[in-house]
Image (cartoon, rainbow over all chains, first blue to last red; front, side, top):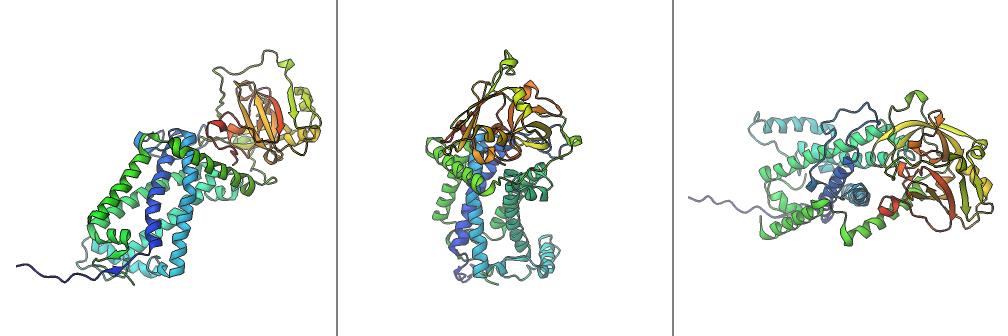
Length: 227
Length: 233
């Protein structure tokens, strides 16, 4: 016997600005990371010449050829400094849209989301049977998406701290100095990579319909599209 | 997943792979564009972020790094055959061309500081430098109104750097004849090198022989190969 489930209604989920900035950031960030790995090769450690050096599992590492962009240091720098602008532009466009549309409310992790985040964690750990009720995003998603925006801002600020350590000396000092700023700039990459891997896995495992929503704007999935 | 979604993903993956593969520097199509953007970044660095008065932080001599690598282009450390005959030539668009010996330079105002050196490669090292401010040379050679840049040339295999006048006039931009309380070592550009904590190391011409004032933007050894021209930090 075939069970009949009525088709879910198609709802508008993502504004074109969200979709554009999302996919543009994917491409721009891939280029920034690849050129960054090429830049890293020129001095593959963190600390003044002669040490002491920051602890890093990638000390002296060279990343595979396919993962690097630019061919050599100058080529990589030119890619990196060219792609930094669109990252900032798309980031500002996205955050500007969130603020103007009020959509930040469905996205920003706030203290009141802590309890819900714990419930969601319990659910994922199978300590709770039913999926907690949620709006457009569950509290853990809010935490992840808020975090990744903060991470993007940190990537830009640590980047400027490395780019102009004399003119923006106050910013460089804020991150603990030039080599410390390089260190954080580099770690941000791996947090981004970790986020992206989890993000893609969860899309396919939990809510595959959300992929189409991010491409076309239309969603026909199991979760609400508004809070 | 419908066909359209699949197609778009395929295109994105294709572009990503193409861009990441083979250490692509942009090729004949994109590389000129990247260099154009680099010029825009130079402009931002020169006109917006550079301050002619802001000083780089200084350190105590106890904070000097144990090591400061020395780079040059020649296969062996560039050395003068006759150090006594060496002169710094100051020419180009100036009212008063100069020929200065090391003694002449040492009689001019002296600046000493301990600063952090930043290499484009990402390393840094702290060292002390002693020399005469470029501003003091400018005062004596009196550049013409048309002079906007300086080309610093060396006897190291044709190495040179082009500078904007504002960066050269910065109070911490000096012609250094000393390093860490000693005469400038051969490995670091003896007898005279350009130094400034407002620039990356590759802009700091070693083994100086001349500074030429120009109205057009002079190139440089690494700059002509694609490194950012301004190189300001």
